[in-house]
Amino acid sequence: MNSSEIRNRARINLKDRWGEGVLITLVFLAINWAFNFVVGMIRFISSLASLEMVSFLISLASYVILIPMSFGLVTTFIKLKRKQELNYIDFIKDGFSNFNKVWSVFGNTLLKMILPIICLVLSIALIVIGTFVLATTSNFIFIFLIPLGLSCYLASLVFCIIKGFSYSLVYYILNDNPDMTGKEIVEESSKLMNGNKFKYFCLNLSFIGWNILATLTLGVGYLWLTPYMNISLVVFYENLIGKTDDIIENVEFETKVEETKEITEPSEDEDKVEEIAEKIVTENVEEEKIIEEVPEETSAEKNDDNKETE
Image 1 (cartoon, rainbow, N blue to C red):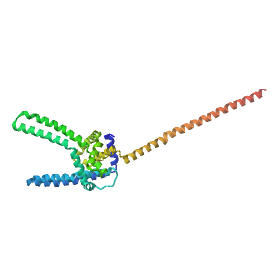
Image 2 (image 1 turned 90 degrees about the vertical axis):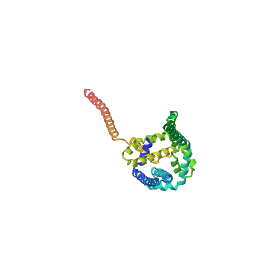
Image 3 (image 1 turned 45 degrees about the vertical axis):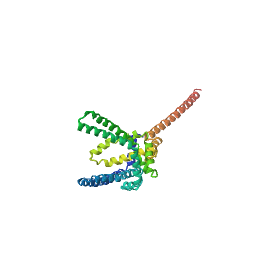
Image 4 (image 1 turned 90 degrees about the horizontal axis):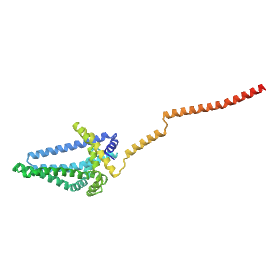
């Protein structure tokens, strides 16, 4: 299934439910904005009081809350796609009811990502060291560290992104398999994404135009784009696990029924053709009868003429 088909299925699933998707996104963004605003204010006050450690701890605490909420948002859109009962603040309940499991999955994912992260940090360190040495000593011997660091940074960034694609389905697997351990979920995501990373990349890339349009609307367009993208990712995941889409099957069945009706039921033109054909057949039959009667009449007249001559 290509990106176009996935987006098409997402639109079919969102038919008559766009309002719910927009409302879920609005509530999530409002709570997220309010939370970030409070955290930002606390960090600002801490920086004024020279309490950098407090500011750092507040930042860590914000991730402790936001990561489970992100999982809850995924589960809410899964419910929306599968036509399950949902509440517009389910992302809070679902996120924190699975708090330990979410962090177990996140921790195992982080362990799998440790190598690309280390490569990324080392490449940044090379750039910083090269820039510092060049600025302080004017020794051009170490200038090679800057292009080397940039090359390593780009390679590490690509490596990090590709590696991250392997674990992009962990929240979907956790939703469907809450009894699995965090390690099993991460490994299952890696198996599902094996050979499908490019499809996942193309799917996300296909939304770049919509992201630009949403940005031009000062962010208002994201109220519609967020459910569109999330439902598309659910369709992508369900396609990989072989889960059938009941709505799509019903739509395809209805279209097939309509097509068979069009084939089996005669149209008005066909009825007219049949009427004309019947008329032609009846006219031919009548002409044949007339032709058969004419010889009989002529033979009878000839017999009468012969009798008169005799």
